[in-house]
Length: 607
Image (cartoon, rainbow, N blue to C red; front, side, top):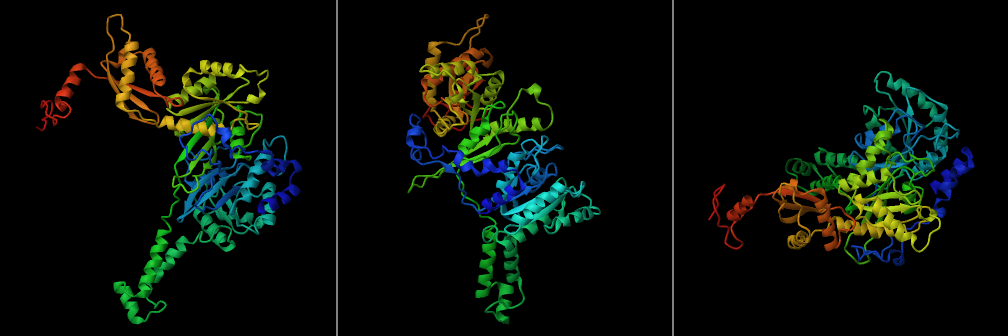
């Protein structure tokens, strides 16, 4: 109801078309999340008992209120979010430039034992002009954040002072939001204890209560701001019952236990027994209350493991459009201009466990990243940090969706990103977007396209290929089944005996090449030492004698002989081991079953 009310009033203040996309988002986006079995045919999922369950947005069992941080551009909203959330490294991108933050991003935070979510928004501008890029889209994102929040923090600049944009934002919040949820004013850039209070006093004119002088850079005043926010949330009951009262309940329980005054049902003798020995019914009740207050700080959500999926690619290939189609709403700003997405934007989806099953739900966390341009074109600044976060999303992911433009084909930057995914050892799925825009398709177009992408991307020749359309939702539902297969391959483990049988056959079919001086690699045996990705160690006489061509040959033969490695790289490690070292190890350990008797060299061996 509050969202509809905000939209109704906001249309009086803003241009009519500013909220068209937001008001129609539920009808224009047909979410492919509740996919049927026919949409997943031909894809074998490792989670076979959950494959028939519809996919939906993740519903957290842990109650966490949302706090929206809003304000005009370049006042320090992202810096304040990083300060409260403790995410200075890897958090929101901060720069002395307006318009850095565009999409709304969620950051977990904790204060006084209370967990909550901070919503970082872009600069809120009511008057559109040619200098305010994506003002309408940023405004829509901010309005969604305000509508779903339990409290709002308005950030203003204490050094610049009160502006007309601050007054417009405060007027809107004062009339339509402050009656339902708390609205607090954070006057940023007030580091000085002497002049900070004077700079904050000017913002009394906003009519939103006490302005708090804070410094997002130094952390000054943030504790007072959060304490006041918790108190107002409790008074207005904008969050769930019990939020913001953990510390007060603990202090009250401790005061009861240490009180010299008689508690309910106590006399003076009971007070002495409770204070000195902890005896009596009142003492038991006080201890139970104290223990319950302490346990409330340790309650955590039993959240199943997340499957991190990074959506990566060069600029303007449809990454944000794909995220919106998966989420079923305008989760990220989409435009025809390259570089629209700045920070990483995530969407969490869930496949619930079957009814009556004890198996946990499957959580998919899709992370939309900024478009990665060539290294020579990226200058130090906001784009440098955007690319770093995108590359970090690849390293932290379980599966990387490499988005390509089916109408353009493979570029050199696509090959670089494919090599990056393979080098980081991430499972990969090649997603060719804009398949609906390909003209003159016939019965051979699909096979020719698959062959083309296989030849142009040898770095990830093993990756499955999907041809989708993020605009129409075509085949987007098949991403989940392909991701499940990729996860299964990424965590696959093969026994040593089977690996050595495949290795023996590969060597018999094609021995290692010899050099001109007659030196030739001798391969003894191999075994798998880890997963994520599958890592195989091969023991040879000299690793330098195994060239790259033979390593690729072994990789190809293992993939042909073993099923389940279609979507993951195989990491090969060649270790040198001389024949006499192998014989020495055999003499040390003895033959299998002889009790470990061997030669006492180089260390004494127990007989």
